[in-house]
Length: 435
Image (cartoon, rainbow, N blue to C red):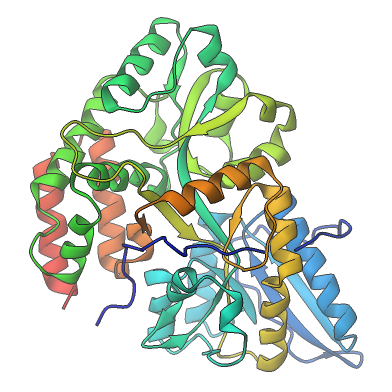
């Protein structure tokens, strides 16, 4: 049975998490090379290596948790390494295959984590923590065959983020339907504003469109049936239609020039928003952390709206694309596994979760949080009302199929493949790798 299921019931999706402390200077290693954890001794101290991807306030929250852990364990030193998202994925895979992984590491749960679990590289932590302290649905995304391999801290939700001032300047209303979104796109183009910023070199930013369109057109059962090999497949007309809508947007010049060659981590796409050159971006609420780090004055212009309904769509407009991130896991090669688990527990404590929510505008997967940040409050309310939350395909599907999903979606944006061809390739690969 496949554990990573895209559809979630959200009646009890998130109960929540506690407070922040002082700022700790960041220790960073942004290289793509592999770093070997020093699990020997520095003087009389044991050493843990901790890898994560987030900069800004998220990083500060993690480092504050590390300092609390060190006060509780004065005989332990923690080496912290921050690496940007896309470089991290490559670097981590190399470290795992080379037998030099960090003790504690960032993951997204789902299929991404399961690949390393299947290789025997991730420590099972079932029974080593209080499972009642977490949202069950979020915890399920790092649970395989009833065994837990990671603890979730945050829940990221994908929304259309937009510049309120530009909308007001041109008399635009927040769109709730696809046709209304197209009208906004056309009005912005007429006023020489890029409608939607997109940095799609890493492929996953564009995948938000395909996933949301498929859900709005056919509902979450479309992906679930294709993934579970029950009924509809990845060549279903719903996926073909989603590809057609993507290409319609591209032909309409809804995006910035050269979007398929622009890296996301470098921030060029976000700069288009910050400088009023572009009006919208479909992205997870991680963008709030980016804004507060990169362009804090822009936050007063920032707002968001849900992905609009699609023509004749059968999906529920309350459905959300969500990601459990970060999920903290422990390498099976850690020479200090019990200490590594204690660090993971500190990184998902109520105190850490409260600070994470307060300072990054995020919903969390830890129970006991009192939401104070306005973004976090609204996102939590939206989560409570959602009929379903679906995980990213590239973090749910097996690695080969996930990569093909990103490749074909990027090709759809670039109009180098037809929607029918993309769907046919996905279904052919699915028949090979999904049993």
